[in-house]
Each structure stands twice: as C-alpha cells, then as structure tokens.
Length: 633
Image (cartoon, rainbow, N blue to C red; front, top):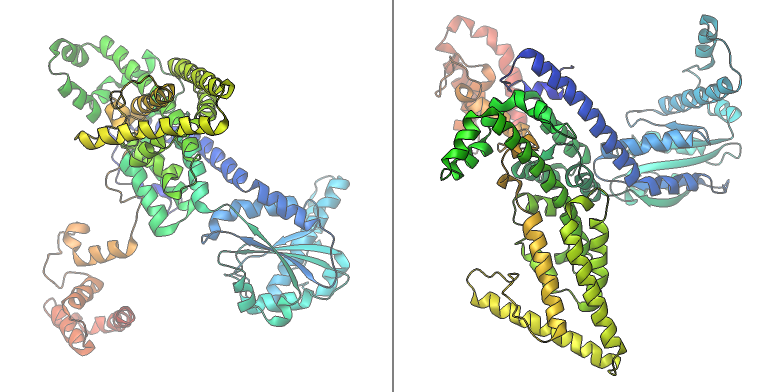
C-alpha cells in the first residue's frame, strides 16, 4: 500500500495470532469494507438525488442567447464531500449535452479552453465510436489520439464543433478568478454557442459578485441549488451503518464520541468522518482475532470453538466472572468446560445481536416521537441520540422524559400506530412480538375511548375540557411524585396512582409502556458479555482526533519520551537534532525574542560537542533562523 495510507497509521498494532490468520483478517477487512463503501456511496448518492434531478432539469430548460445560464450549487465548507455528486452530475450531463469538468488548479485561460476542447472532443468521438463499431487496431488507436490536439484552444474551433456546452466548476472559490472572468468574457455573447455554467460554492452568492467583474456578472442568469448539509448526511450514515440491523462494525461510546467531536468541532467533514470509521474497522480487523465472528450473519459452534481462549481474555467476560462469583459451579464450567463455554458464548453473542435489533427500532421510535413537538430543544439529531444511547443514559435523558410527559391524547393514537409500523418492519418484527401485542391493545383502548367521548351527549368543548383536565391531573401527580422522591423516577409504574378517570388511566398506561420500552431496549451495550466482538472501542481518541501541530511540538519538546530516543535527554544537549535544539531554546525565551542571543545560545550548545563542526552548521542555521522568524511572526 502507498506511503501515507491508513495502513501506516496502524503499524503500532501488534496482533497476537500467527501470520496466516492476520493475512486472512486483512482480506476479510477488504471484503467487508468494499460492502460498507458501496453502502456509503449509495447513501451519498441518495442524499442529493433530488438536487441532482433539479440541476439536470435546469440544464434542459429553454435557453436565452443574451445570457449565460448559471446554476449556483450551494455546498458545505468541505468541497471534497461533494466529489461523488459532481461525478454523477458530469456523467449524466454529458449523456445529454457536451460537458466539461474544470479543475480548480487551471491558472490560465489557455489551459481552461484547451481542457474544454479536449473533453468535448473525447465525448464526441466516444459517441461516434458507439454508432460505428470498428475493430480495435493499433491504427485506430493512433488516429483517435490525433483527433484531440491539446494546443487547439481557439474558441472559434470550439463553436464549430458543438452548439451547446455545459461547464462544471466544483470549487469556484479555489478557481483563479481572473482566469474565470476572462473565459466567461470569451464565451458571453456568442449566438453559435449556448453555454450553461454550474458553479459549486461553499459560502454565498456574494463571492461571485465580489470576485468577477461587473461586465461578466451582468451576463449571468443565476439560479441557486442547495445540497444536503453535512449534519444530515452524517445522521443518515449513522442510521444506515450503526442503527439499522446489519453486520457492519458498531462503534463504542468513547470512539463514537471522539468521531462526533472531531466532526462537529474540528472539520465538519463527511469524508473525514467516513475515514475515521474506516480506520476503526481496519484497527478492529487487523489486531483482534475475534473480528472474524463480527462479519458473519449467523454463527455456529464450529465458528466459536477455535477462539475460546481469545474469548476468555475479553474484559467483559472477566467482569462477568467477577459478578458471578457467588455461583462457583458456573464459573468452573466457564473456565474449564469448553463444550459448555462454547454454548454459553454462542448464546451471549445472539443476545448482543438481538439487543442491536431492538435498540435500532427503539431509537427510530424516539426520532418520530420528537417530531410531534416543534420546539427545537426537544429535537436532538440522530447522531446525538445514538451517542447518548450507547452510554445507556438515553432512557433517563431529560429530553425523553419531557417528550413522554407532553404527549397529548388526540395525537397519542396516531403516534402509537406509527410506532407499531416500525415494530412490524420485517427486520424488527421477530424481536417485538410481546410489545406489539401490548401496543395493539393500547391503540384499541384509546380508539374506543375517543369514540366514546365523540358519541356521548357532550359537545366538542366539553370533550376537549375533559381531555385537557385528565392530562393536567396526570402531569401534576407526576410532578408531585418527582419532587417528593429523591430518585425523581417520574416514569415509574407507581408514579401515577390508578384512578377511575379513563383519561388518566390511558395516559398512565401509555407513559408506562414507553418507559418500559426505553428501559429494556436502550440498555448500554457494555452490560452484555462479549460485546467487544461487535463494538470497537478506543479510549485514547488519538486516531480519530489528530492534531499535527500539538504532536509536532510535543515531539520537539520531549524527544526522549515521545520519540524514544536514547541519546536525547530532558536537558538541552548537542546530540539532539538542530531543530530540537532551536525549539527548546525558543521555549526558554520570553515574549520578545532576541535573535542574536538565540544564535549565541545555539552556537554554545553546538560547541560542547565539537567546535570544528560548527562552521558546517552555519548553512543549516540560516534556514532554521528563517523558520524561527516565521513562527514568531
């Protein structure tokens, strides 16, 4: 693999098994990541599918010769996140109209026009090749290469070749604006060439007016398109990769928190979020012999038996043994009886998979529950809900309690039907048989209750009054119980006393149902033995939140500890590299640095080693001095 790839970051991983097993897991990682990558690409394509269709429809609109039709595509601050979108746009657009994709590094009009001419001629010849099939010979290949001349950048030749053209600029801010102005001036006002311009921006349309001349912008007829923002894309990735039942690797609480912090605070980049997930998968498969179990849809005893010793080394298994110390027979069987331990391990792994399925459905129920309330503070994004749920605190989270207490009776029945639809999904239904029965009984009870009040002699105002009175009474009793109890368990079954009032009873049963559902389904994965097989956890966070500047400073200031250099000591010595010496001297200076004093101190340190070599280092000193001055500035 190439230098600087993800494999270079994993050289510190020391697997415990033999080389053939390690090679097999690396191949397994490649297979699994190919599946994950295909899923990710499909998610990214689906996220902007509607906007892609809108842009393609914009290209097909009637054209006015007095203007350059311009589509402004508003993206995120990271242009690389939309690479797949522009590839799809270019691929579909050139099927209809000759299209060229401009690189932001083109710094002259000649390069731009030459690239346009080359791409358009290639597309034209490709169409001719599809219409007339010729045998593939060396003569044909030679003639095809002669058709495109990179020196042909005359706009008149371009006009003679095509009558309509689409120009895509994925990153307008990175483009040389003088070059762009010149090219647009050349293209404007030509009746023989209809030009459609698609500009990708990450700021606002003001950047176009600020960078291009007035004579050029006056020729642009602009229409704006918005791509899906990075937050929604990450939420969609979280749902499909980590929430929905599948064989993909799940992230532990600390690992996902580090990935989320890096995304929300440092870069806001979808691609870097994906790279972090890829790095976690790579570390999991490269260093853990048990990773072969996580990639299988179903497991059998033959899969588990060869790995019993590795399973016994898991921290979660050791914690389980300590918790079960009152049952010595069970501990003895787990530690000595491989047959018993194989069966027990298989059951525990099935429990973890079952928990993942119930967990996903319950999280989707919380998402649709949030949508009942327009208040922003009650609507947490899916990525945040997933992080809270990994720690097992989501069921006790204040936002969830508030959601349960604010349910209104007229909306309860419809909401419960939506929850039932989620449970009846084929991927969830086998794990929610009992809950679906309870939910159907609740729906029937509430439906009968509403019909009873609608068919009674009371008018609508009386019915609304009774419903609101029942809600207020229940909430008041819940609030009273929460203030009275030190545990503040407002959702406990005893929190609301039974009453003859049907409204209060119905609301109480609904709250108790959701409370029980959240408590049972949103338990932390760490409560299950052998969870490390399906959840990757890295408590260091170093791999997911790299800080090159801090790492460089730490290495220069503490080379003995950080670089494991035996000749380097804590005090400054001549055995250190020149950069380290100068950096350490720089740290000893105050706010104002006297460059002459710094030079003398540097020379003094070098003289302690060998004064005859001092002259050789003067050339290096000039370079280091320049770096030091730039750092000070």
